[in-house]
Image (cartoon, rainbow, N blue to C red; front, side, top):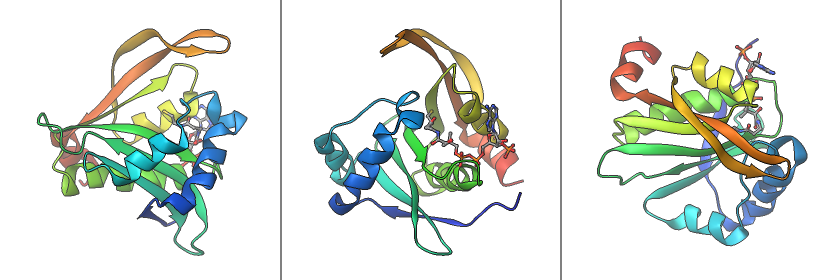
Length: 168
Ligand SMILES: CC(C)(COP(=O)(O)OP(=O)(O)OC[C@H]1O[C@@H](n2cnc3c(N)ncnc32)[C@H](O)[C@@H]1OP(=O)(O)O)[C@@H](O)C(=O)NCCC(=O)NCCS
Protein backbone atom coordinates (compact mmCIF):
# COMPACT_ATOMS: atom_id res chain seq x y z
CA UNK A 1 0.00 0.00 0.00
CA UNK A 2 1.33 3.45 -0.93
CA UNK A 3 1.66 5.57 2.19
CA UNK A 4 -0.29 8.84 1.79
CA UNK A 5 1.42 12.15 2.51
CA UNK A 6 0.23 13.82 5.68
CA UNK A 7 0.82 17.24 7.18
CA UNK A 8 0.86 18.10 10.87
CA UNK A 9 -0.51 21.55 11.68
CA UNK A 10 -1.04 23.08 15.11
CA UNK A 11 -4.51 22.49 16.50
CA UNK A 12 -6.63 25.59 17.14
CA UNK A 13 -9.75 26.02 19.23
CA UNK A 14 -11.82 25.80 16.03
CA UNK A 15 -10.52 22.24 15.49
CA UNK A 16 -11.63 20.99 18.89
CA UNK A 17 -15.13 19.81 17.84
CA UNK A 18 -13.38 17.50 15.31
CA UNK A 19 -10.90 16.37 17.97
CA UNK A 20 -13.57 15.67 20.58
CA UNK A 21 -15.80 13.84 18.10
CA UNK A 22 -12.87 11.64 17.06
CA UNK A 23 -11.98 10.98 20.70
CA UNK A 24 -15.53 10.04 21.61
CA UNK A 25 -16.22 7.76 18.63
CA UNK A 26 -16.69 4.20 19.90
CA UNK A 27 -13.90 2.73 17.76
CA UNK A 28 -11.44 5.14 19.39
CA UNK A 29 -12.90 5.60 22.88
CA UNK A 30 -12.26 1.95 23.69
CA UNK A 31 -8.50 2.57 23.36
CA UNK A 32 -7.95 6.12 24.61
CA UNK A 33 -8.81 8.32 27.55
CA UNK A 34 -11.27 11.18 27.21
CA UNK A 35 -10.18 14.78 27.67
CA UNK A 36 -12.33 17.85 28.27
CA UNK A 37 -12.39 20.70 25.77
CA UNK A 38 -10.46 22.72 28.36
CA UNK A 39 -7.71 20.12 28.68
CA UNK A 40 -7.28 20.03 24.89
CA UNK A 41 -7.10 23.82 24.81
CA UNK A 42 -4.33 23.79 27.41
CA UNK A 43 -2.36 21.34 25.25
CA UNK A 44 -2.76 23.69 22.27
CA UNK A 45 -1.08 26.54 24.15
CA UNK A 46 1.17 25.07 26.82
CA UNK A 47 4.92 25.34 26.13
CA UNK A 48 5.50 21.80 27.42
CA UNK A 49 2.85 20.30 25.16
CA UNK A 50 2.03 20.09 21.44
CA UNK A 51 -1.31 19.38 19.80
CA UNK A 52 -1.55 18.72 16.06
CA UNK A 53 -4.24 18.07 13.50
CA UNK A 54 -3.12 15.45 10.98
CA UNK A 55 -4.29 16.30 7.48
CA UNK A 56 -4.13 14.53 4.14
CA UNK A 57 -1.64 16.71 2.29
CA UNK A 58 -3.39 16.11 -1.03
CA UNK A 59 -6.67 17.76 -0.03
CA UNK A 60 -6.14 19.33 3.39
CA UNK A 61 -8.81 17.13 5.00
CA UNK A 62 -8.36 16.42 8.70
CA UNK A 63 -7.77 12.70 9.21
CA UNK A 64 -6.73 12.67 12.86
CA UNK A 65 -4.89 14.36 15.69
CA UNK A 66 -1.94 13.79 17.96
CA UNK A 67 -0.56 15.12 21.25
CA UNK A 68 2.94 15.25 22.74
CA UNK A 69 3.53 15.91 26.45
CA UNK A 70 6.90 16.71 28.02
CA UNK A 71 8.58 18.77 25.30
CA UNK A 72 10.61 20.56 28.00
CA UNK A 73 11.26 17.52 30.15
CA UNK A 74 14.74 17.79 31.71
CA UNK A 75 15.29 14.09 31.03
CA UNK A 76 14.46 14.70 27.34
CA UNK A 77 11.67 12.14 27.56
CA UNK A 78 8.59 12.93 25.47
CA UNK A 79 5.27 11.16 25.89
CA UNK A 80 3.29 10.43 22.75
CA UNK A 81 0.09 10.97 24.67
CA UNK A 82 -2.32 10.44 21.83
CA UNK A 83 -2.71 9.57 18.18
CA UNK A 84 -6.11 9.06 16.62
CA UNK A 85 -6.79 8.49 12.94
CA UNK A 86 -10.41 8.75 11.85
CA UNK A 87 -9.90 7.24 8.37
CA UNK A 88 -8.30 4.00 9.50
CA UNK A 89 -6.40 1.48 7.44
CA UNK A 90 -5.17 3.83 4.69
CA UNK A 91 -1.66 4.33 6.01
CA UNK A 92 -2.32 7.72 7.63
CA UNK A 93 -1.30 6.40 11.03
CA UNK A 94 2.03 5.11 9.73
CA UNK A 95 2.74 8.34 7.82
CA UNK A 96 1.86 10.53 10.81
CA UNK A 97 3.84 8.45 13.27
CA UNK A 98 6.95 8.62 11.10
CA UNK A 99 6.72 12.41 11.21
CA UNK A 100 6.00 12.47 14.93
CA UNK A 101 9.00 10.28 15.70
CA UNK A 102 11.24 12.47 13.53
CA UNK A 103 9.87 15.58 15.24
CA UNK A 104 10.58 14.20 18.70
CA UNK A 105 14.24 13.50 17.94
CA UNK A 106 15.09 16.15 15.34
CA UNK A 107 13.00 19.14 16.42
CA UNK A 108 12.60 18.61 20.16
CA UNK A 109 15.91 16.85 20.91
CA UNK A 110 14.23 13.98 22.72
CA UNK A 111 16.37 11.14 23.97
CA UNK A 112 13.34 8.93 24.49
CA UNK A 113 9.83 8.87 23.03
CA UNK A 114 7.41 6.65 24.89
CA UNK A 115 3.76 5.72 25.07
CA UNK A 116 1.40 3.22 26.60
CA UNK A 117 -0.93 1.13 24.51
CA UNK A 118 -3.72 -1.08 25.79
CA UNK A 119 -2.95 -4.78 25.48
CA UNK A 120 -6.18 -5.19 23.48
CA UNK A 121 -5.04 -2.65 20.86
CA UNK A 122 -3.32 -4.99 18.41
CA UNK A 123 -3.41 -2.55 15.47
CA UNK A 124 -1.67 0.27 17.31
CA UNK A 125 0.84 -2.07 18.89
CA UNK A 126 1.72 -3.54 15.49
CA UNK A 127 2.25 -0.07 14.07
CA UNK A 128 4.47 1.10 16.95
CA UNK A 129 6.58 -2.05 16.81
CA UNK A 130 6.98 -1.80 13.04
CA UNK A 131 8.34 1.74 13.47
CA UNK A 132 10.93 0.78 16.07
CA UNK A 133 9.16 1.08 19.42
CA UNK A 134 10.31 -1.56 21.90
CA UNK A 135 8.05 -3.10 24.52
CA UNK A 136 9.42 -2.33 27.98
CA UNK A 137 6.84 -3.76 30.31
CA UNK A 138 3.21 -4.05 31.25
CA UNK A 139 1.18 -1.58 33.30
CA UNK A 140 -1.11 -4.18 34.80
CA UNK A 141 -4.74 -3.08 35.21
CA UNK A 142 -3.68 0.56 34.86
CA UNK A 143 -6.69 1.70 32.84
CA UNK A 144 -10.22 1.85 34.26
CA UNK A 145 -12.75 1.06 31.55
CA UNK A 146 -16.54 0.56 31.69
CA UNK A 147 -15.80 -3.18 31.48
CA UNK A 148 -13.25 -3.28 34.28
CA UNK A 149 -9.53 -2.63 34.56
CA UNK A 150 -7.38 -3.08 31.47
CA UNK A 151 -3.62 -3.43 31.11
CA UNK A 152 -1.27 -1.49 28.85
CA UNK A 153 2.16 -2.07 27.34
CA UNK A 154 4.82 0.59 27.85
CA UNK A 155 6.70 1.07 24.58
CA UNK A 156 9.54 3.43 23.74
CA UNK A 157 12.05 4.31 21.05
CA UNK A 158 15.39 5.90 21.90
CA UNK A 159 17.31 8.54 19.97
CA UNK A 160 20.12 6.03 19.32
CA UNK A 161 17.60 3.56 17.90
CA UNK A 162 15.94 6.22 15.75
CA UNK A 163 19.19 7.34 14.18
CA UNK A 164 20.31 3.72 13.85
CA UNK A 165 17.15 2.37 12.22
CA UNK A 166 14.46 4.75 11.01
CA UNK A 167 16.72 7.05 9.03
CA UNK A 168 19.10 4.31 7.91
C1 LIG B 1 -3.96 3.02 15.77
C2 LIG B 1 -4.22 4.03 14.67
C3 LIG B 1 -3.65 5.39 15.07
C4 LIG B 1 -3.49 3.54 13.40
O1 LIG B 1 -3.78 4.40 12.32
P1 LIG B 1 -4.19 3.80 10.88
O2 LIG B 1 -4.18 4.92 9.92
O3 LIG B 1 -5.44 3.02 11.04
O4 LIG B 1 -2.96 2.82 10.64
P2 LIG B 1 -2.26 2.43 9.26
O5 LIG B 1 -3.31 2.23 8.22
O6 LIG B 1 -1.17 3.39 8.96
O7 LIG B 1 -1.55 1.06 9.67
C5 LIG B 1 -2.26 0.08 10.37
C6 LIG B 1 -1.36 -1.15 10.49
O8 LIG B 1 -1.95 -2.05 11.43
C7 LIG B 1 -2.20 -3.29 10.80
N1 LIG B 1 -3.39 -3.80 11.45
C8 LIG B 1 -4.68 -3.47 11.23
N2 LIG B 1 -5.46 -4.18 12.07
C9 LIG B 1 -4.64 -4.94 12.84
C10 LIG B 1 -4.85 -5.87 13.89
N3 LIG B 1 -6.07 -6.15 14.34
N4 LIG B 1 -3.76 -6.46 14.45
C11 LIG B 1 -2.52 -6.18 14.03
N5 LIG B 1 -2.26 -5.30 13.04
C12 LIG B 1 -3.32 -4.70 12.44
C13 LIG B 1 -2.35 -2.95 9.33
O9 LIG B 1 -2.10 -4.09 8.51
C14 LIG B 1 -1.25 -1.90 9.18
O10 LIG B 1 0.02 -2.53 9.21
P3 LIG B 1 0.96 -2.63 7.90
O11 LIG B 1 1.20 -1.22 7.43
O12 LIG B 1 2.20 -3.31 8.41
O13 LIG B 1 0.16 -3.45 6.92
C15 LIG B 1 -5.73 4.17 14.33
O14 LIG B 1 -6.22 2.93 13.90
C16 LIG B 1 -6.57 4.69 15.50
O15 LIG B 1 -6.83 5.88 15.59
N6 LIG B 1 -7.03 3.78 16.38
C17 LIG B 1 -7.92 4.17 17.50
C18 LIG B 1 -7.21 5.06 18.50
C19 LIG B 1 -5.94 4.40 19.00
O16 LIG B 1 -5.91 3.20 19.25
N7 LIG B 1 -4.89 5.21 19.16
C20 LIG B 1 -3.63 4.73 19.67
C21 LIG B 1 -3.71 4.63 21.15
S1 LIG B 1 -2.19 4.02 21.86
